[in-house]
Amino acid sequence: MAERVHPATGDFVWLASQSPRRRQLLAQIGVRHELLVADASEDAEALEAERHGEAPEDYVRRVTLAKLAAAQHRLEARGLPRAPILCADTTVVLGRAILGKPRDAVEAAAILARLSARTHRVLSAVAVGDGRRRRSALSVSRVRFARLDPGWIARYVASGEPFGKAGAYAIQGVIAAHVERIEGSYSGIMGLPLYETAQLLAKAGVRMPQGL
Image (tube, rainbow, N blue to C red):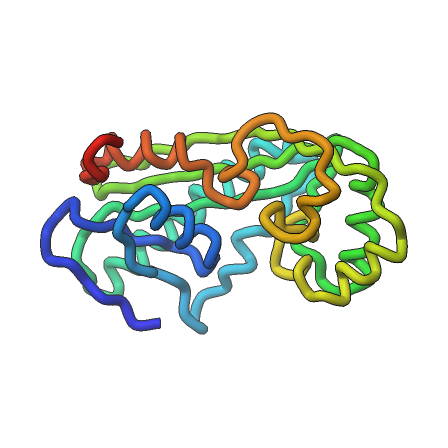
């Protein structure tokens, strides 16, 4: 997608993410943004590769900062106007196991079966770079699902909703009817913790809407 630009510094941020949910959440708090996403020459998926023995918290922080570094290089290479860059990464964790985006229907069903009737953590890291420094924060939330019937799991996977989502689900989707309890940040579970994001953007000099 071609980037549009706003000339005034502090008037917008670059969002280095293709997630429509993150765009929706930024719009919710009134932050103007434009996309700064990888093109075919970049291996964006490689940034999310796990390292043996890495703690989930370290993983999500590392991936987010790697995304930010790649986006800053992208900005310079394309000769785009300077503005703060926002990156984020979200992962679902059961114990120490990272449950990423399912590769196929079989893996999606297996992930959901593991989450059934259990409490898992959702880790969402966010980072902002303003040209002078990089700032980051981590949001940790807990979600408990009721028992997910195998037949329901099969229908949910067939709907296509689990694909492209960490943990094979979207908290804002139909699976919400099976969520017994949430502790933490709902927006963080969606993919962008808004409290932490707003704090980081303010420190980077982004003008927040009046009253925020």
